[in-house]
Image (cartoon, rainbow, N blue to C red; front, side, top):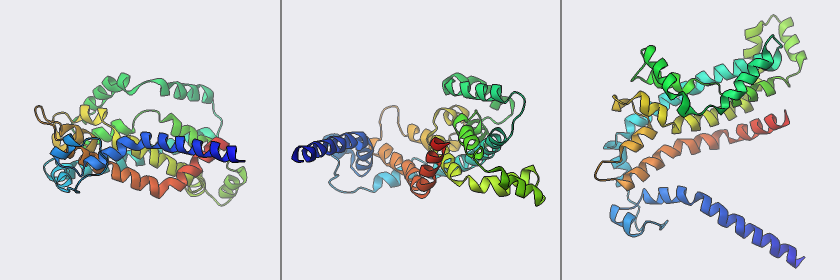
Length: 276
């Protein structure tokens, strides 16, 4: 019994140490955002600042133009999530509830698209956005971010909708609902766990997206998102490390808030997907 408790204690200690190593960069970034430049270089690895300097946040927000970048990120992220939700939910509903010619081939093509890295598709996306006349605009960034197969989301919705009893649809049809009303008023409200999972994952991906916003807003700095604006804090000769740390802390706060608010739906959505 004693050996069992000792073994459990060692296991817990190992996991706690591993967890600390895992989250140390995150804690270090938050700590560095409160340090002075001198303290940053003299005690760079320390997690406890001598005094909490809020000047770094003020400098990042005002001089780093993070207020504008924050607004741009919110606009791009919300619009992208709405478009992705609409596309993946309707596509998943069709795949999960109906049989049609070429369905398996469609799923196969959708599946293999997940193996195409973003870097390989950046040139076609750039050319497409340029041909649409959306270069150097938030609309172009939104369209680029919302593009792609979003295979995981489509399969999550398809798996969930496939489990909905047919009696619900039949009852809606008897009540006079067509395809669209059945989808909006019956199927979609039941898929809140999947919607929550999609919102969280797409929010993180779009909020942290760097390459597409960088390429599509090169000549319009005022349209940068937070991730691109954070990179812009790095000067050619002088690097404002504490300002960058403060900017990173500002950028990560909305992600934590969204996850805490929607974590229940995220867990339910993942559990439902695994079960399906």
